[in-house]
Amino acid sequence: MLGVLVGKLEEPLAGKSTLNRLELFAPQGVSRYHRIRPDGEAIERLFVELFLDSYRSAPAEIVLDLDATDVPLHGEQERRLFHGYYDHYCYLPLYVYCGRQPLLARLRPADIDGAAGAREAVEQLVGQIRARWPRTRIVLRADSGFAREALMGWCEAHGVDYLFGLAKNGRLVRAIGRELREAASEARRTGRPARRFRELTYRTRSGWSRARRVVAKAEQTGDKSNPRCVVTSRAARDWPARALYEDLYHARGEMENRLKEAQLELNADRLSAHAFRVNQLRLWLATFAHVLIEALRRLALGGSELARATAQTIRLKLLKIGAVVTLSVRRVRLALSESCPHQAEFIAACRALGAGAR
Image 1 (cartoon, rainbow, N blue to C red):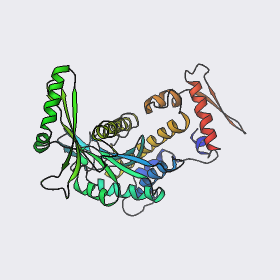
Image 2: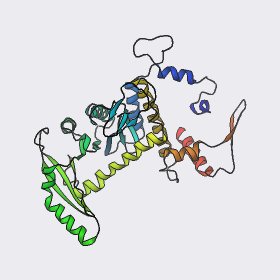
Image 3: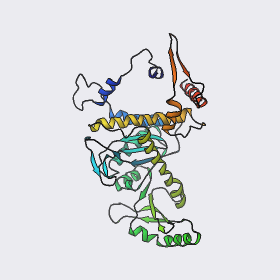
Image 4: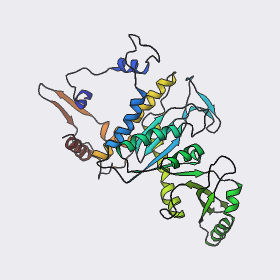
């Protein structure tokens, strides 16, 4: 079946031993057993090329979501370290997504700042995207772990917009004291959560090179106040405070769903090899699976009930179904059960993919 799909029915495909040699490549030198070596730079560039190819024309604007997450480790993997926040041994990979499509999955040890390497990664991605789409506006979006001077300063110097969470502190809370009191008063009166927003021009006492626009949310939920802030380069005339926070920044939560899908449904957490470089390769392979699932949604499942289905749902309803395979001289015949509950979606997806191939 794999041979049919890749158009190499008469040619031998790589078996598990060959794929195992790819994992166990020698970092230096070449032996007779390690002639297959992954090209890390080419792999990372390919993720971006596949993303760019998924558009018929350059969009006016794209939003790149950055996030770091933990991959729990249960063995003696190379460069494994204990992370106090997650309370276990783990890796801390850096991910970048645009909507549902992954652009970067870079493995990192856990003894680093969550934003470590983000500026270099963004520089690489932005350079590759702008080589194809020079007029597309690029916006970075992330939580407060990425509100670092190095990244914000680079964005400002290279015409990239950003929207990052900003950790609250005493100065910020005092600055929105009136809004917090008003929200608390409304919440007591109505019995429902209340919000107020305020624009600030803010600069840290050390670390930031300039004052920046900060949007502060003063929220009261029950008897608890919940002040939150974001720092951004977006202009107030384009994105007023409430819309910026509720419409643009809140959408960052979708990134969490992508990370859960990658780890829980596409095996991005199966990093059990000893060597760090092998685990990076496994993370890339899981990310390619994510690319394929998203391409299937986009190209073949649009308009169906599976258009926004998770990877696990697509696997169970469209991929892991029984069939009888019959080979003859002229054709490969697949006989599927007439009682397959999702045969209409399966047939429509096959036709859509076939039309796209032609």
